[in-house]
Image (cartoon, helix red, strand yellow):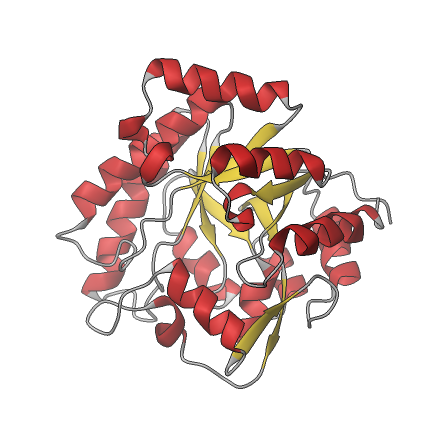
Length: 291
């Protein structure tokens, strides 16, 4: 098996800021980068036209390209109908920024999709995603939902209710292994029509866990990447580990991606660990062993 995919790295995984993170991504041998674009220096509201051009030119000068932006607004995703109008508009501005920087993908968490399609939370999420999907489709772009909060089959059933594929999937096999216990290989096949971006990380599930304890749920708890990272580091219920040290069957997972014809980025994410740069460098080498 020879993978055709380019290797990406989430710049924020280095924990050293955007510019230094870009340099480190280049140093470990990545070909592309994903960047959080929600707040701080990457907030679309803070990036003037001049700053956007400067950033794009700088990334190009390093010989890198952007695989995607991350537009995860945390909280309850799009479960809260009252909060959604502001979040939808912010998400649109992040997609505008993405397109201007040279990518057509924004990854995000939308909150756990409820089992009951007639519930008010399901309806709120559906309406928000429909609006975002139509907007993305008009730009030949995608909002890509990260896998993990619910089984692949249930996520597909939700996506199938939308009128476009403007809302699609950012496939993360470790989230499935760690939280829902879902099979990533079957998940790839189930979501084959929606996968536009992937994360590469590994993990171990110690015991069953309520996804609401990880990702939050309206009226239950709020979601944050910091909380997820803390849980993954503690190892009580699940643990994020370096590539190849966990329960993701990468040969089978990569073969499944090839089977469905996925040629997009394999973007490394490392949310825990004392030496992320070393772990990411080893992850790049791990993926290259399949090329």
